[in-house]
Image (cartoon, rainbow, N blue to C red):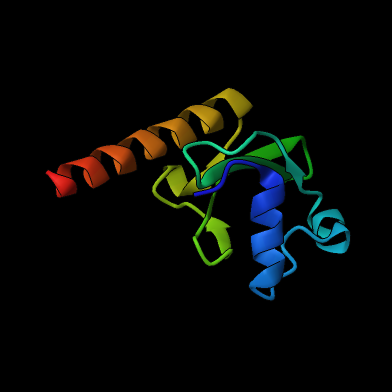
Length: 104
């Protein structure tokens, strides 16, 4: 579980990936749009594939530092930042409930 985006970026670099490197983020036009949600999720925006505006994506950081698009949310992309953040919070709640239920 992570508390800050800095922790996720450090774990990602330690994993051997460059997801948060300035070159990678510039190539895709990526911006981090949220703090850490539920210890593992966050929202980014990227240049929209149409060239118009931005697309918002829910990302998940694994314990190892691997970062990927969480496709449990409408293929992962949203046209609205608030919708993406809401989806990330929803995933965090669902995973928390499943974990708590498993322990009972």
